[in-house]
Image (tube, rainbow, N blue to C red; front, side, top):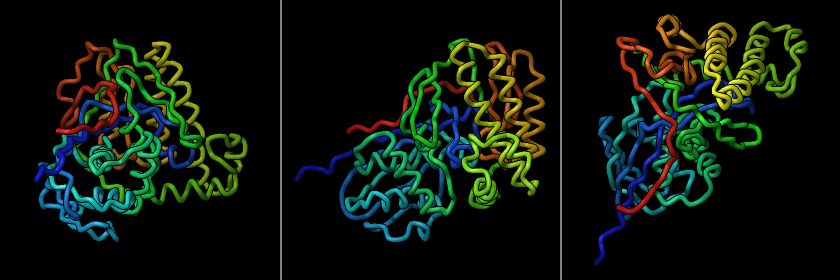
Length: 341
């Protein structure tokens, strides 16, 4: 009897250069897929999803088809279980997950795991459909009302390019990143958990403003300023101004204007700190320290906030030694892929 087919599925994490808390409101974002990846090596057979992780304790043993991924234990297994549920998978996987992505750092380790799982299970389709399925899987498995940015960045990355993603039309424009720019991700030491944070509340506050203003990315500034609820006004102002910054940053990046991109990143951080209230004192201090380093063009929190990482745009000669608890120089990389072993 022939042995079951074995596959290797690889999905990158992502860092968002600018544009946070805009994707779920139909705005624009500017992420890159990074060279840090999650890899699943597994055999396709049976009717059980059985995966071990070199990063987390416990083994996922999930009978297929999956009925309720939110009840699966250990908790990390809810992400692959959610994907299996969304795909309606009936053929199992037995294998191992290895990841270079630190959990809780805002580098989309969960999205990378979802995308790799879908490919390992045999998903065939476009990058967009892959991202949609994985986004829906995360929402179902965790209850977090995430947007599509993380999954789409992991699926559709292109080496040497950032992705200007319009989350309303779900279209991508690949923007070249100059080779003489260095992109660093610096960990604050504060881990975060979206399911336990105010992420869902922020989305509700944006939707409250949207009910009055219409789509926030294009809402008139005068209408935003006239909102009576100060919280809704601040949330709407962030989404509207952040989308403006993203589009200008994309065009400036394509022109090689690192100074302007850096300035926009700093303005983005201030908006996330003041209008969206998702930064922390530790993150603010880390951004301030980064901006004092010679050769740094800009810095901001990246991801949903409440801890995690700061992204720094700098010259290749900038000295970021001893900044944060961990740091990685990342490069715009290709998206997810799968093949036989």
